[in-house]
Image (cartoon, rainbow, N blue to C red; front, side, top):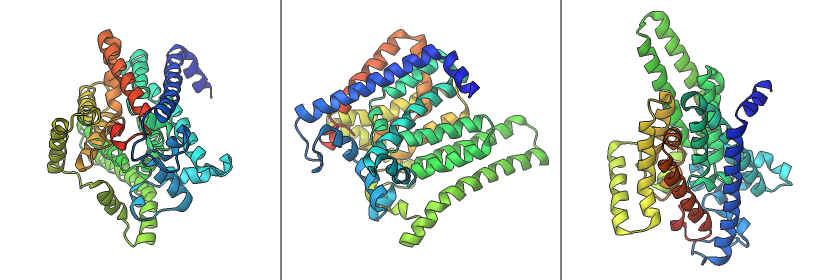
Length: 384
């Protein structure tokens, strides 16, 4: 407790600024949600049971699916969605008098507040307090950041990832492995973190240049024990799917059906990038342009930050943006780009050193954030 109080006291100025931006963006979110609902034309994809602007938060794209899983359980294509978030919604719903919607809303928003604190805390050691402050604000103001405040997995996924990463840095490998497994239970993208840890262990082993039985045994022990914990946690989900569908990997079939997702390979990635480029010219629109620019920009930023942050942090970020490029459905790449955590380190560093970059980046982010939140009740194509 004393360490927590000391953290808040030491970085009081930076944390105050961060939370002012958090509050301001959530107020903008609420205002634009109402303006969009009452003054913009309704799109064809608006849900029939949306009777006011608040209902959009609970019916927004896949938000309704998570709530439906929490209420009625899994079936068919719903197996494409990880179980941790809907399970938590169900478990906490009694606190909200049986409201699955408010349970989901609370989980997402509390998780995001903790994520803000953890990201700032983690980055301080590598890029300093001012750059870390800008990096955290960049996440808060990301064009798709409203996903962190609706019934979506983004915030909970961020939370499990950051707890795992911080625990790994502190050599609390058991805690790190548990939360790595929980991240995969939230979204399959969490497997990128597992791969990143494996690479980090191997790189550190090579750097030691002490190749003997003891060091090799230590590497194998740490790696295998970490993997066993993750598999044990995720294995519960596989056993459940096998019991319900007769196929332990049924979620892969559901993902192929829902999003045309392929096994990650170079050809699939090249096909997706070509598709993104051609769509920009074929359908000139904000969404199609962002579908190309957002992942490419965040990927480049992650690569530029490699020397500033640990290899597992960078590798996770790079791999997590490459994974969605293996799907033929590119409608949500702007949202997926938000998961590229190491890119925020680069944004923070550049924002501290270059005022022009800082103004341009945050101005663009704010404008897009306003547009995205204002069009949540419109056609899916305008805000995904």
